[in-house]
Length: 98
View 1 (cartoon, helix red, strand yellow):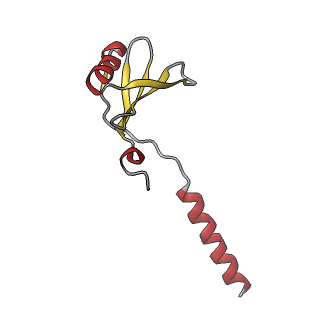
View 2 (cartoon, rainbow, N blue to C red):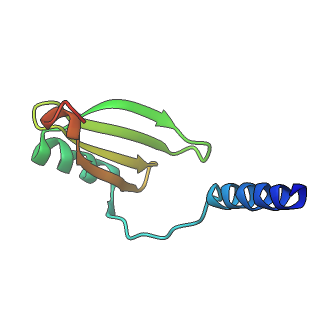
View 3 (cartoon, helix red, strand yellow):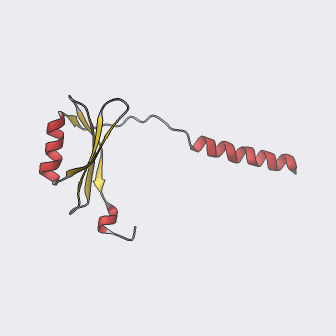
């Protein structure tokens, strides 16, 4: 019985440890000159910067949002290139129960 319990715990711990691995992911991103990317989201989606952070690689990440529509965009940029990391809409703005 003790061996069975130990085997079960080992399998459980192994499964949890495996599930927590971080993997590399390659995905297509939209990139351009920083001012072009910022202007697009400010002009087209009426988003404004609400947060800016600096990465360990000396690039910056900015979160832009439009509170009226709930849209958001996250951009990473340096002095020569900006890429959209993600964009979407705030589900809680349209459905506060989520």
